[in-house]
Each structure stands twice: as C-alpha cells, then as structure tokens.
Length: 149
Picture 1 (cartoon, rainbow, N blue to C red):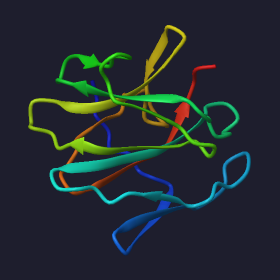
Picture 2: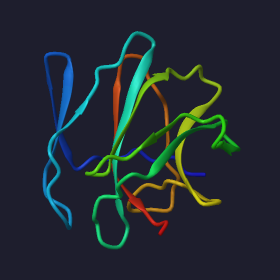
Picture 3: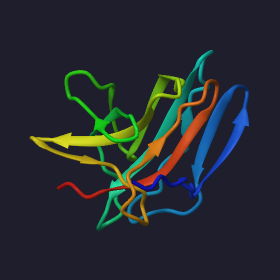
C-alpha cells in the first residue's frame, strides 16, 4: 500500500488560536463559507477536510465519516466502535481530540452507507488516505471525493 501526502487546495491562516480555512476556488456549486478548524488540545490533534461528489464536485452533505486505524497491514473501521462525524452543508468534516499516534498504528477515513463501505482515497490516485495524528497539530486532508451514491 502506498501512503501519499495530501496537498490541499485550501488557504489557511492562524488567528487568535483558531485556524480559518477559505477555499481558493469554488467547486461546481456554491462557494462554501470559511470553515473554522478548532485548535487542538494537549496530546491530541484536529483532523478536517471537505467531501465532494466525485462526478459533480458538489458538496457531499450529511455523510457519515468514520475515523479508523491502520496497523500497516489492516485498516479497521467499525460503525460500532470508530469515531464518527457528519459532513456539514458545505461538505466539511472535522474530528477533534484525535489522540496522537503511539507509533504502532496510523489513521484512515471511511464512509459506510447502508451496508456499503469505502476507505477514502487521495483525490488523484487510488492510494488510501493514511495519516499520522501529531499532538497539537491541525491536519488538513484537503478536498476528498465521494464515489458512493
């Protein structure tokens, strides 16, 4: 499995302990309002991104995103045990208080809809998104494409 670094098409700025995210260019559909990513606490990170339809580029609204673990061989995401958030009206999602990695595993993201699940992939390749959570950092995964309909 190839691990890739995500390059975000989103501009960010830090002000008063809050990361403000503003899209550089609109996707097909309305330009979203700036997204504010919370500053992480001690020993944890904040992970966020934006989910859009893979065909139309429109925001994927109210989609459950699961935070899973990757141990180097197996990706594990569970509807019963994995942390879950929903995308907002502009397709943004944010996980707060993500524990920093201990070195034995990394994180991945997935979508599970009506018994169909998929690990989210880097927008321009087939590589699954795999990332480390670093204490005190805000991790921008950029714009991700949703292929489930």
